[in-house]
Amino acid sequence: MSENGNGSVNGRSGNSANGQNGRSRSERPRTILVLSGGGMRGFAHIGVIRAIERLGLQVDEVIGTSMGAVMGGLYASGRDSFQIEEAAQEISIKDYLKLNLLKFLVKGYRHASVYKGKHYREFLQNSLPQQDFSEMAKPFFCNALSLTKGTMRYFGLPDNSPVPVADAVYASSCLPGVYEPIELLGDYYIDGGMAETLALKLAHARRGDLIIAVDLASHDHHSDTPFRATLPHIMFQTYEIMGKVLNEHNLHRFVNERVVLMKPKVRHIGILDQPDTTEVVRLGEREALETLTTNPLTRYLCDPGIIQEVDRTVPQPRDYVHLDVDMNACIHCGICAVTCATSGYADVPMGNVVRKLHNYECTRDSACERNCPTSAIRLRNL
Image (tube, rainbow, N blue to C red; front, side, top):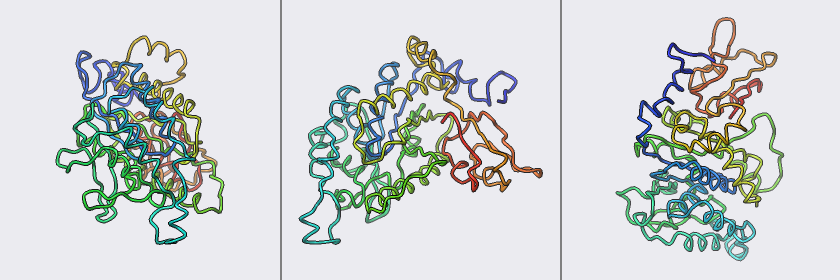
């Protein structure tokens, strides 16, 4: 762990005395909450919102993708975490994934989706009846991918034509092949997570002082996902791998000194599993409490009483990543050094070395770990 002359670690923790970027403690940063896609893992977002409520943090805008758009939309509509959890209990895989059997018998593979999506759209229309984004309690945005143009659309921006919030959220969470693409304003849209599962680009464009981002795309690169010779498994596993690689580049570019990134421990849940909602909410809340109370960008904003409570159970700060390399497996190929966005590794004549054992600037994209050809790298404290 390296320290500079004024006692801050890698130049980052020194901001904690006055808050973010020298901001006075009496000033509150304009805060944007960004929620990623992740299928049924998205229930963890409810726990993050509950932690934000417990800590007394204020959110000014909400951006969501896919299931993050569903949970973010419910939050931005004015619901608290308990009301969102109550609504989420209605989301049943059994009801929402009913085969389009009749259409398949008539149209075969000319049909646009495997499942009907009727119950899912009804849930969104009942839960988010707003006909325009201006009716939301907080500014809310969600992204979806245009099938005709190949471009990303961010619903909720002031120059967009009016679109019902439920339709925009459906577009943002419409997995291709799973649900039928929705037509909006003469275009057809699918899940925004196909290209951008965590909309940090828009969050930076909205010029938030503080960006709290929740990424559900974490993966253990040292354990295999069992293969199943079924179409749903191959299709969903392909979506997940594609999303992780795209998200890696996204984090690589857009995680900076204004971003607090958290990764709830929900990787064991399949994107279309039917999880224990209460347990997933608890996992999201725990991760958020640990991250927000130990990161110097948010710690000074949190309720001191909750900070003391969490400090008794958190063994180490959550705002750095520990770089661990098995030198017996390392072949000194140099891929880690050219991959790392924050110079965590160095490519030197005698072989590659770890420059920052505790990397406070790490973007948490796991690029070094995923790209290591011998699986010698393990990232700790993610």
